[in-house]
Image (cartoon, rainbow, N blue to C red; front, side, top):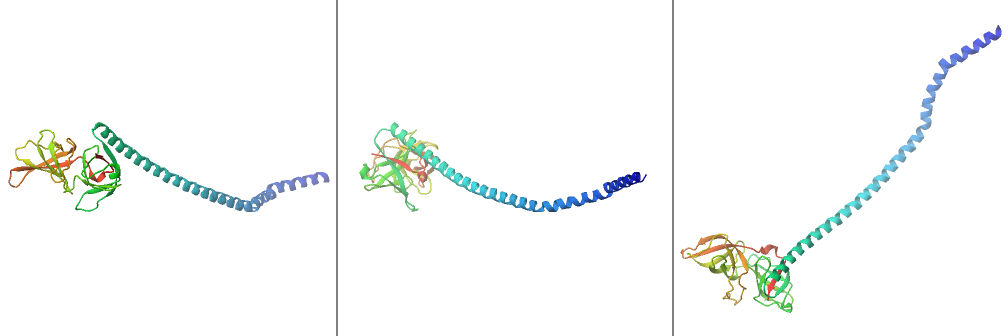
Length: 260
């Protein structure tokens, strides 16, 4: 009987522990585990931060390298575009020289006159290359000007829009003749045209092949000069003046051909 009571007491003690005491230990175990793991969380946090810092630095270096490569590629693209534009211009000049009769000297523009009173430029060819004063200068579009100074290795060209340049010319359609002179800040002017002459807007004007009186310079016949943009009457009404838009843009010249 006593043994049964003892077993029953042990059973109730175990049941009491299971119901009331073990949950308390279970509750205490969780904070204890968290506290014991806290240093690991701190170490892991710093590991993640260091890892992020390393990758940030690596990405920054990679970004820097990519920007440098981008700059190099942009520079190459610019250079390639320049080469493409130059090849296009040189091809046009070469094809023009093959079509036209005569001998040409190729030259590059190396300097421009910055004065508002004259329009001229310096080229990299001179008497050493066969260049002489009064030789006409052209490109694939038409008349550029003529040589006014010839050094050994460089020469100066007076351009078509210079007021000192006078070119005997004619209207291609009607063969009406006149004298073309330059205007620094506008179109060219073709004067000495009779008031009854057959000339109209958009008519093409070319060199006539006559000798320029002041310089005895001869421009080969048929070199394009420009197109008639406006026609006005002189004050006395006996002559016409044709304002001509030149085919050659003197502001963008980089290479020219000298007619020998």
